[in-house]
Amino acid sequence: MTLRLTMAQALVRFLAAQFVERDGVEHRFVNGCFGIFGHGNVAGIGEALFERPDLLTYYQARNEQAMVHAAVGYARMKNRLGMMACTSSIGPGATNMVTGAALATINRLPVLLLPGDVFASRPVDPVLQQLEVPWRGDASVNDCFQPVSRYWDRITRPEQLIPAALEAMRILANPAETGAVTLALPQDVQAEAFDYPDAFFEKRTWSIPRVEPGSRELDRAAALIRAADRPIIVAGGGVIYAEATDALRKLVEATGIPVGETQAGKGSLPYDHPSNLGAIGATGTFAANRLAREADVVIGIGTRWTDFTTASHTVFGNAHSHFINLNVLDFDAHKNAGHALVGDARAGIDALRSSMGGHVVDASYRDLAARLNKEWDREVERLYHLGHQPVPTQSEVIGAVNDAAGPRDVVVCAAGSMPGDLHKLWRTRDPKQYHVEYGYSCMGYEIAGALGVKMAAPDREVFSMVGDGSYLMMSSEIVTAVQEGIKLIVVLVDNHGFKSIGGLSRSLGTDGFGTQYRFRKNGSLGLDSDKAPGAMLPIDLTANAASLGAEALRVTGVDELREALENAKRATRTSVICIEADRYEAVPDNESWWDVPVAEVSTVDAVNAARRDYEKSKKKQQPYL
Image 1 (cartoon, helix red, strand yellow):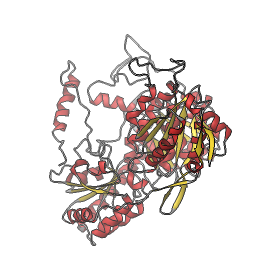
Image 2 (image 1 turned 45 degrees about the horizontal axis):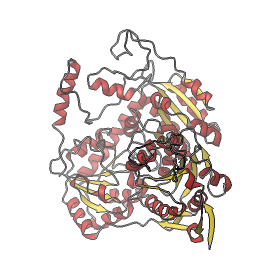
Image 3 (image 1 turned 135 degrees about the horizontal axis):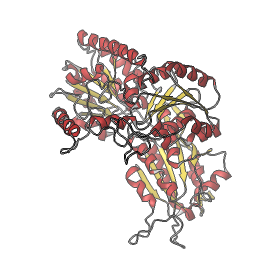
Image 4 (image 1 turned 120 degrees about the vertical axis):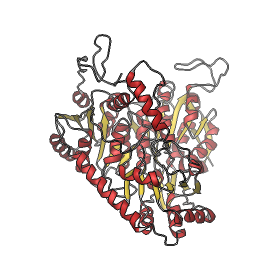
């Protein structure tokens, strides 16, 4: 039996019938479609969603990049067991999604992108928004998605949808291969009909097995750990996506091995667990970084070993250290010349604990980790309550939000100085409480990502923490939140410009060049050392947020912020709370470093001094072999 449907109608029916299963629990996989319609998709995907709203809920977005961010936030909150599709028109609507595609793929999170495309039949080339390539007639702007997608295809005949859709789902549901999947849909093909077999629309469940690493590899890993004096675990996002936090806790309590957390892995243990050293690497705590420096065996679980995690290959200072990497993706498991354990994080942790044969680290090492945990918590408490005047520090703002958040509430952030401070300071009590996008560190993710988080977890309060720079880049999805009746609490930190890069600029000897929001004066936008810089730009962030439909107010200190947060928790719609913070007060770097090259020659003395410091730090880098 067959059904005669347009390609777009068939795609919507197919997506509505897709499920995933893990540990015997089934989840609907595709839970809606964000979209902005134009001439490239309104008569195809748009008509299909209009005709069958019962199959796939349509969510209207304001910005194509933002809707991909929202879809990514949703997928991350669902531990990759639920996802969204995103559709755009051809041209700028499509290319706006490229940034979101890169973010999804870098963070190993599933999102299905359905950009419209030019006519496959080419009857009237060039159509509106068509990129013409003289030597290739089938090129379009959608080719831009190829390097940032885990799977890419262009559907030039309606029957091609069948193999392409099945392959797309295989990739999206596979934790080792997932990321952005792009199906470019020519606008004429979307509307063409074909007799699709009924079997294509039957319920299909994609099983996600918990693959255990090989026994020989586990035995060798256990032997390395037993021979170690100072092993350390680095917990990455894979621990949380695999719902392996309980397994990690059991391993840690059985062996006494301490844990440092990556950005994606923060929340793998509660902040007050005595073996939790907190953040590790360039944005790490002194607790984690001190033990990492002497570690002789480093056990990475579900981490892809970014430069921030390794502090640009300086934080693991033992020249004789060995890496053991447990990861579902073979590529990540072999990084740093590590001993690879390829498999699911939960299954792998359980198997590794069994292979350890009751091994326990020396009691003095376990006690050292517990002592460092307490020392770091006292430092967090100090940074939460500095009483800085005339405006608070960013650490005090974080402290107020952390105190306001319940154990299951979620903080969302992405870019600037805030992620580093959150990584160090946020007291995480639940595996899904900390949601910082730091694989792509994409400005503009904060509000859109929070929207997706709240859609995935409507029973949790969601706090989006965003600087004025990111807010001005992309605040549009406040409108979507208001339209959908989705409540967010946005804490908007006014830094009068780009605080993070301002600090980096000063450290490189360039005095905050190009990072302040000021009027041009005497040909300059001003430097941090200017005695009489141009006036601040008269940006009214609160009025802007109110104009988008949010409840918005500006507060002038931490006490007012705490009161406003309590009011926002009681509110029924999205609130935006704006507060100024001191752009020059920063959380200490805790004995860490990040490799940002400094100009080798310069006429500026401060740059030359920064170069000398850079060359000293560079000597601490080492290959992990």
